[in-house]
Image (cartoon, rainbow, N blue to C red):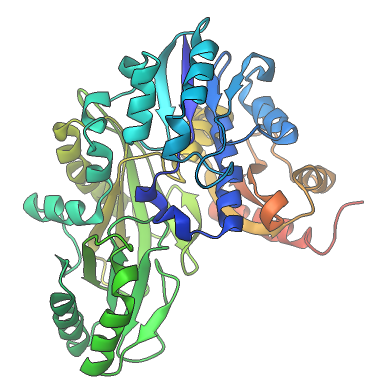
Length: 444
């Protein structure tokens, strides 16, 4: 039996796809190749475009997967072209025919997808693989959007005693204006959030004065008085509601907080803890550290315990698969939860593949993993590996130490994502600093 791996990109993750610049869509497509980290012998991968040979050989060399046994199925280009796997591509009749042929001699008993949306469930049903998708019945009725809604999260969290930031959900501009003004008048900055968006890209911070350091949002907007608030809500309402009339989330913003998460797998028996980490916001997510380094062990235990309680209602509803509870630790030491993501996250491939599979679960407790996204500018993926090897920084499987290149965006952005694996945070930072020197001092 085989696993089918699908790298879909629904709008519940990225917002209105039609408004995403072409270069960013191309980058999303390259990021889809990270799903190669999940592949094992004989698996079937549904990708937006054929994988890079250099990247595939590198990943499978570390995971021990025989690349020659993998089968790739690429749907025809869709409404937004060939760069990302949109819903229309996954239900394309030509693709479904080709996928059926690809599965004829290797039936699947498990489906791993980025997000269990309606297109994935329809595709699975069309090729007779619905039983291989965990939680298919729930997802086939739109459950994925329910679990990934920030508005639904706040309602579920509030109803189950999960600590969240003061705030409201609204679909009325007048209510939004009054709430924002009330928080600002009390001297607190405000975070406004689109209902569906990831990585902080659908968030903005509002403040009465300048000098607020953004984290979790790309910018800070200064609103000096009630009239400025009124203009902001009026001018930005379409954006705030995702250009689709979604609800808007308004919360108090806590500057200088640490962003952390606890990730679980929801199955029939409960929410099984997978791992925790700390997300580096500069000002939006630029990487992460596993395990969290800026919070005390007791606080991590609290994160896991409350995070499990935050995820459990979604499991009871019928969701199956990855659930990640995000939270902030405020400067006063308060732990406030911000959302639950029912999908593969930017952290999942690290826990499942790099931490447990490549480095090894037996080393989990004496290693620190520091991933940096899009920080290292290189001419190509091959050149990145050459520079690492020439400087003696490449990952060494025998010691379980070194730098792993986890994603290749070089063809679009000229950058790659890497993860420094070290014995402690200082050593991981040291590897990061040494990688930085390779920018101006390439290995010959």
